[in-house]
Image 1 (cartoon, rainbow, N blue to C red):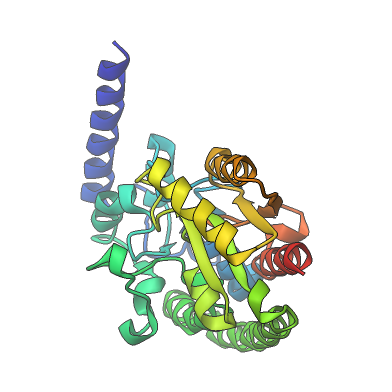
Image 2 (cartoon, one colour):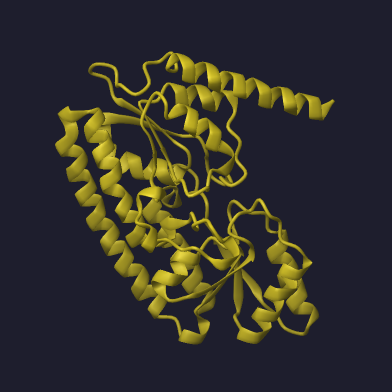
Length: 313
């Protein structure tokens, strides 16, 4: 009975997507109302926060996914589809981060601008880990200098939709780009303050590869790049061995990933005569609560780096 209900919800959403795509969404999606703000719908709150910084008062930005939501597993609801259908512009991370929303985003693109920010980054700048062969790592925001490359893309999309405020969007992109340049330099300095042997970052899933590449840390995830594949006993044992070998004093849980695998590693290390602690919670695939410092992209970066450095130092 439960399975039938799930199938019905999936069928109903598919019918709704087809309907709004065929009729243009019923809300004039793709063209702002005269004199009204541009309507932007973003998938993750990381994308939404960035769009807000560039749009200022000239747009209304909504995020489908809130704090603590795992975008790898997220399925759009019927209300999400309606919100997407009413948008003038849809922004998403891409690179298969929102894997279960792929069909919906393709259909929406028939009637309005739908932009994958990660896919605008040159391929040579992206990671293609061996265990993720044929696909790029989607967690590009963990390299601040890489995420800054998405700003001109957003600014130009907004300028095309709302030419009257094009200069504002470009100026906001320049100003925010300068802020991210300073943030990138701060992260470099903070990580460089750690002794080299302490620059080992063990996290719940392999989201921090770009962070490690940019700032000089060895990164180990208990789970893989996508949380669609759950960690098993072999994964836990592999990380237990690494913790014992490296002598790293702490590992980290993530806001959008269950704690159980990290706790299993702690228990495994303890069973072999050593102690390792959980050094804190990192924000990986989503920002923190709205209104908190971690609810913004720069605030999230600062929280993560401070948590890492304090635990490993």
